[in-house]
Length: 313
Ligand code: CP
Image 1 (cartoon, rainbow, N blue to C red):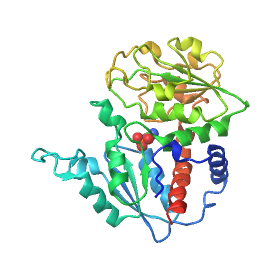
Image 2 (tube, protein in one colour):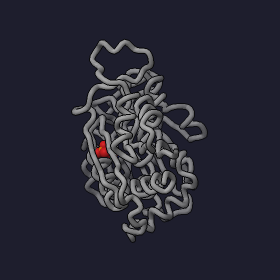
Image 3 (cartoon, rainbow, N blue to C red):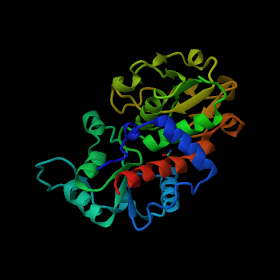
Image 4 (tube, rainbow, N blue to C red):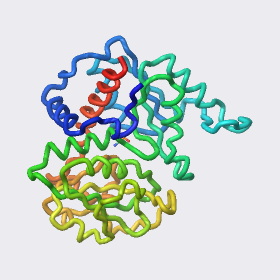
């Protein structure tokens, strides 16, 4: 059984990017291979873009869609083995996943990191629990450590707007009042490492991402130096990986401004807190690609769902 749990499930990225660009011109190009099949989307956390773009993508492919806000409407799940379940958790993932697999041919999961226990988050217990026990192919709609649909949409956006053979792409940390997961930043690095770009990562001390992802990536704590000559600037907050889940600083000097952006395109996955992560002028100026990124989420979801349908006939 083939899942779409991470970018490693894409056999050859250039082909996916080519198909995505063609799909933008011809949204019904893939036909309706999902006819007669059902996709169930389980949301353990809030969503705007993922929820709507995945539903739209599924409809375009002919799939029936069921959506459940599992985080607020489902039973609290246990994931560990051998636990005496006499606390607040009413159901084990072993049963819950198998049951969902009775109702759907494919299951999408959104489940953010707890940011309490790095080992558990990086073991992807929710996503992997459903992949292991549901008996059906799984679509990752942002898990504890990865957001492959966002990264694929980001790569499609970069391809759409690139004018150079090897553009300079900067991933810059930004301040945020809450502790956020590392998933988007992880997957952005992961996808950019597979593309012909000059990639630079910049963040304050204490915000280094997982070594497996930053290996070979040019990294600096000097945001100004990183931004020099940038063609695309991807801004994102994440909490600390080393001091797991901690917010070590909210230094407003790291906020993106039109002056810092210069002539570069601005990218962010959204949602975005204005005048904390990026100034109004960045979002309202002509260099922001955030809406185009969101539009490309539908293409990314169509490609990933078609991959699930094609590989699990
Ligand atoms: N970028 C993204 O995944 O947006 P949502 O959280 O609104 O789905």
